[in-house]
Figure 1 (cartoon, rainbow, N blue to C red):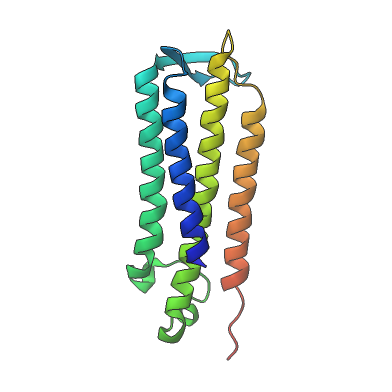
Figure 2 (cartoon, rainbow, N blue to C red):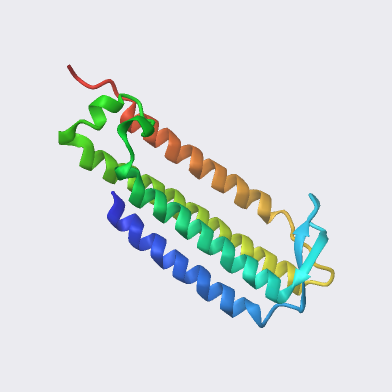
Amino acid sequence: MRGPFQAVFLVLVLAALVQVFWQHDRLPERVAAHFDAAGRANGWMSRHAHTAWHIGTLLFITALFQGIALLQSRLPKDYVNIPHRAHWLAPERAAATHAWIAGAVLLLGCTVMIFFIALFHLLYRANLANPPLLGSAVWWLTGGLLATVAGVIATLVARFGRKPAG
């Protein structure tokens, strides 16, 4: 399961980095970076600080999800929290189980990366308005992220929650 999600994740990372550099010169010198619940700007930073924060966020997300996907197979069995762990991590099934978990982690990474690409696009568009206004799309975006995370967790529970035969 890891293969296709690995490629998609890396393409999304590249797209997010392109977005950073495309937006940088198009943003005002003073960027609205924080908004209240109504979408009105109430926190500001310089364009360069915003770009650095944007890049830092992307690098953190990349390192987090890529690191978990790569390292989870090296964890001791006791640290892998799945139902029926002894069955799923038995030597004959461990490689397939770890590949499946890595794929799920990378799918979550793709979802989070899409969320941040969209969020930074909304921030960019908000900063083109005078006064900057974020709007309600951020709430739909957040709801979509939460629904996707819940779906991946439900899929993991369904996949590994089956009582093994015998």
